[in-house]
Length: 253
Image (cartoon, rainbow, N blue to C red):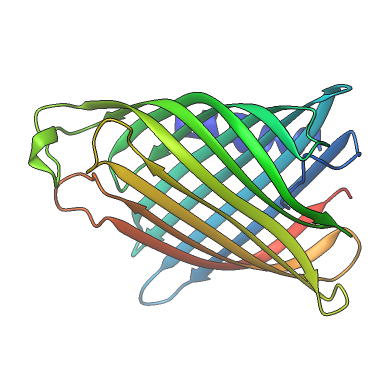
């Protein structure tokens, strides 16, 4: 099932085609990042991460954007992670300073024993800065979330006995991209804070930071740091995860 989701949410956008900006005038923008680590010998370690971004204008004032990632980790030939995250947005009139959005997410998480998580909602984006391919945006949204676990015991005992945890959430997003040192380095970041609107003990946040070194017009060397936190996790699991990877980004713009 996860192999199928990997093709659908990560490889499919690549077949149709870095962090894209939905406010750009290009009708189609696409990027693919591959990063990871392999160590053989006495202890085998595999860390592999794929990110794909696709931004497409189906109509004059509408933009569809999908951001997808797949993470696989293995230590001593034992699987530690096999996770999929698909973030999908539909924007109306994104060339304006303020514009509305609809969103739909799907994710899985092997280590945190999440079989599938889905969110559906809407919100508004504020374009704080956009100049010379440098941009900064803040968005506010609200979503309804459904999460199916493969266990019913959690670090917060109030949730014990339920394999499904559903809630309404509010989200604040901050993301941007900047070219510095005469465009010799590209710094990008995307983060969100996502509390439950019904329970104060249920919240999460994510920070994804990237540093790119352009090797050519369409190819960058890239360093990525991903830091995630969830307040409600399966019993025995840590609330925080961190991942540092090195690799390359291909793009069509």
